[in-house]
Length: 446
Image 1 (cartoon, rainbow, N blue to C red):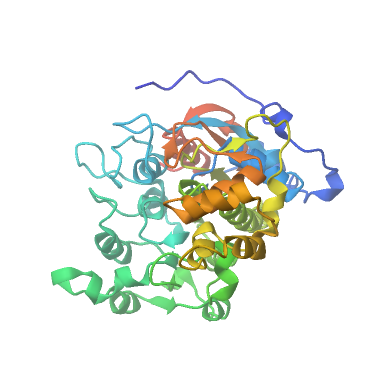
Image 2 (tube, one colour; image 1 turned 90 degrees about the horizontal axis):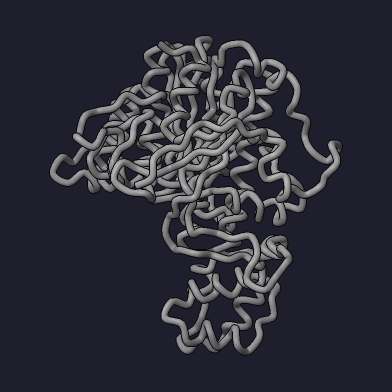
């Protein structure tokens, strides 16, 4: 297993400069104001830790092409970091989340514990002990590995019912995402706990639709008010399909969480995960990956807007690992074509579900959801595939000139974007365990 390399100071203006698209200053929001001016001094009273699960530098490069201009975070690149876990060169989300939350390596599959099973304190828990409020937001179940790593401690990331029990018993003030069934008695086995009722008894206001979230009554976290929003039985819908649901967007959940938590005069610590970029990577579904990245960028914009006005908020944007080994370009091509993915209106899974028994309607289904007219060879590849969904994703990725090297995580280094007080101190080449330590320093936590 490789070890962490020495720190090398990297300039955000130099790294990836060859991948940037040219845009005018007028075309981009100006986030060089109050937050950046305060970046070399001052304590970070609030932190918004934003994790695009599965996102790496090649995702960032393809996303610029997809969007047609630089992403909101591109001007705030401070460095890169490594991701290996305690027992593997390639991490899973539990070990990566634990490293990013606690500053310690652990084994894949483990949440909030070291390899010997000892409980690790998280940066969120340290912020709570310092008097700050806290929140978790995700498009997965709120009990999934990454959000769980900040407030739960279990040997197996799949024990989501125990994670749910620990989350309700924790001091987290705001939790928004999916996973309602993890909190109901039928999911608890012999314990038969109704965690939703328990949450209500512990001053949580419970909401389960977008309309309820957007119309919550005034909550005061300093008076003990808390918010629990579970908008789906399991994970939320992919961004491509969200409009067919009553679920809020990631940016709406982020904005609401900030609105509730900012009432605490001592500050807050908020974790926001764009969970499904990772799942799209596992499926090699380029359109799903880019559309969920766009949804994540909208959430980052909400965080940047607040940080700019507030002047005391540090925003850290860092993926936990790469998924799928996405490439920018494919063999034999010198072009990038990810912009065509904007025309895609369904995931590969959804398109495959609309195929008839003999798959004779492949051309019609794919064209209806992508605008692409398939060649006979492409139709045949889907017709003969064991996994029609994966075959559809392969065809679309090839048209977009997006390549993939894996259906799993990879060991790629991850870009680190930072905005706000003390942001300059994040410059350089790091390990994922360095991130919570640098955040703690910026917050002046003991």
